[in-house]
Image 1 (cartoon, one colour):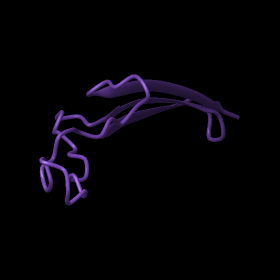
Image 2 (cartoon, one colour):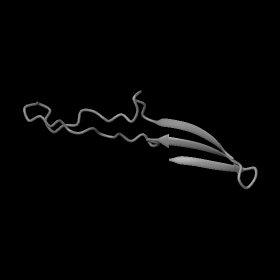
Image 3 (cartoon, one colour):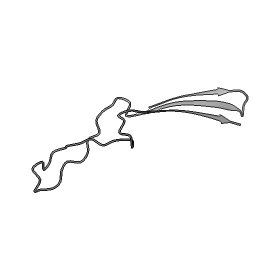
Image 4 (cartoon, one colour):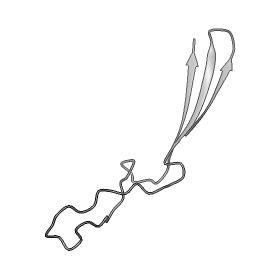
Length: 68
């Protein structure tokens, strides 16, 4: 999900602000079920996928650009 705002100074020069979120509603993204037939937990989902290296549930970033 993203929100974006552009502020124009002239026709060719403007400033752009962006606010972006990933996994905005914090829904779980389940990992694949256990596929080893000899495992006692065969077919069960035991974990969720992480969307970042830090393991954060929600990721937010703010960006700015100046176009000229």
